Image 1 (cartoon, rainbow, N blue to C red):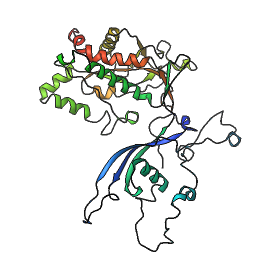
Image 2: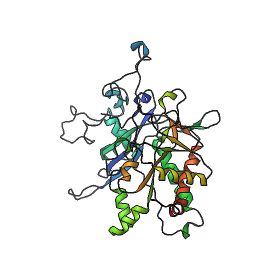
Image 3: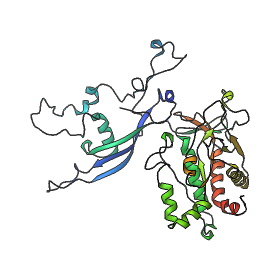
Image 4: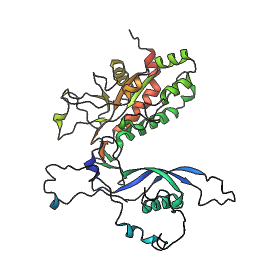
Length: 373
């Protein structure tokens, strides 16, 4: 079975060249020889990415669905199944010489784990990619991905066309901003301030996991930096958190979907996300801080608020702010969020990096000069 994850724009996955990536647990039982029958094999967790198209979700021909252009609807359980190959006998042609149960009267165990759970062709594909025997594949968690690489587009290369920019765009920019800050000649002279980034999994499905923002990762991190209750309370009160997640650029074909005075554009700088119902954690202090930090690098700031007649999305910002840490929600404007192929501004990458670098450089001095009633 293949399960959908989060709130994807699922129709965009049809007729795409798909492949597999994820984590595989492999054993050493076929490569190790031992005289001790009780000895356990070694187990290793490996990352895998099949770098070629192997799956596809084909659409139904228009001759069989004349109304498809009026309303494209499909059942995600029965009509959204990716095709791996043709019938079993053809997939297993290379293994046809292997003795079948009918031809072999021995009581030997199947050569692959859980043969009824996964097709032998899939196990063979993973084994070849990892240079192990199929029987060494113990278990795995795999995701489908689009094999088309990211690229620049637009008449002046002003766009990036890519999968997963929500939220790898923010991730890349934060990492680059921290690297740029750490490479400064004055970096070793800075004292009394800890700069860090936290990259979480599972934001699209609620962040409730051991590696999600709802986990104890950030509280434990702060506790280890501040081992006594008094130190921890002081650290929290002095800290500031920038929740960075991609934002919505105004779509030229659907301008009515946006609040009239809050229509961010790509390549026009950082987007401050504001919501009175605290779906975003931004407040006056947070927006002031972002504006001043962006100003230091000569950048621009935009604002986004959702229409009153539409529901508002959310980020990890509000849940992390429950620790008592001051928090602001920002992003960069993009189109087609959650599509298999998203669009963002190529110039905004540097704008985003500048924001993070300015934050690491200038937050402490800005914070010292602010008096809060």
